[in-house]
Image 1 (spheres, rainbow, N blue to C red):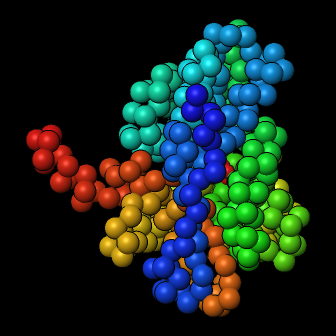
Image 2 (image 1 turned 90 degrees about the horizontal axis):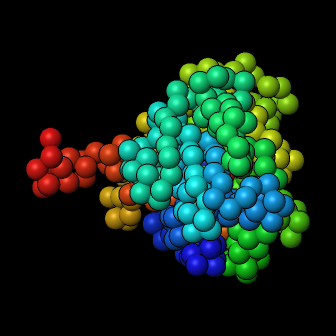
Amino acid sequence: MTTAIIGNTPFRKCETLSQLYESQFFIKEEFHNPSMSAKDRPAFFMIREAIAKGQIKPGGTFVEASSGNTGLGIATFAKQLGYQSQIFVSKSCSSEKIDALRMAGARVEICENSNGLHDFYSTQFRAQSYAATHPNSYFTNQYYNPQNIRSHYKTTGPELWKQTAGQITHFIAGIGTGGTISGVGRYLKEQNPNITIWGVEPKGSILSEFLTTGAIPEQHATYDKIEGIGRSFIPGAFDRDVVDHIFQVDIEEAEVAARQYRQLTGSLVGYSSAALLASLQRHKEQMGLTKEQHIVLFFPDHGSRYVSKIYSDLFDRLKTSLNIS
Ligand code: PMP
């Protein structure tokens, strides 16, 4: 079954970025996971634990609030294991991800925002409420489930350490639930405390201020920008002790960076991967890049999930060729 091939994703040097920024750049390509994103790792760990602990009976429904990718992992594995899935996404979720969720067998509800459990209209509130009112359902709750961090601590971190032969100096990842950066960050710092862990989030998100000052800034109720990353609350799965700095970028900068990267390399990148590229452009001086560094960019998913949003030129051409208005 496909769960056997979660993780152990390819890792490769990116010559284009290495030349552009005069440093050694590598990419961890998470779109090679079974449902095409890094979130297969936490999805599988969370499901496996709930089943093992008897928190859900066969035929029951796994419930999750997701920007799409975790939901897709949950839906895929739930179906394979004889369960159902109910996924709450926010209205900013790309049509490609909603289609993929439905094809994976999920029931999908589209919510106003993903502002956290305190907001009645959020994906998280709706998911919690659904699980509370439907017998034999289980809310995997990636924002607070320890299996989220654990999946990256146990799999992604060790993979990176091995794939870089211990040469990694910097790890850069977008922050949504915080699971990736917290699990990978802790593992890598345990191997070598000098490894630098950088997060990226969109402007308006509150985690960089929280990291720097320890204060929880006033919440931005309308906040919901780059798909997969950025928050208006502090997720329980965000471990600030292992993150050195968080860079912020504009959504427009990310889109431009994605299109430039496509021109240079021919590759389509996901929204949050594009945010990492934008962070290099905007913050390269502050990052102090040098030739000796081994910098790993974490690409959680693929640009094919966002063609209608980021690569609208491709989308228009596709529609024309299929004769769709
Ligand atoms: N990028 C994408 C595309 C995602 O779906 C997510 C998960 N929301 C992230 C980045 C952030 O990962 P994490 O939740 O582990 O912080």
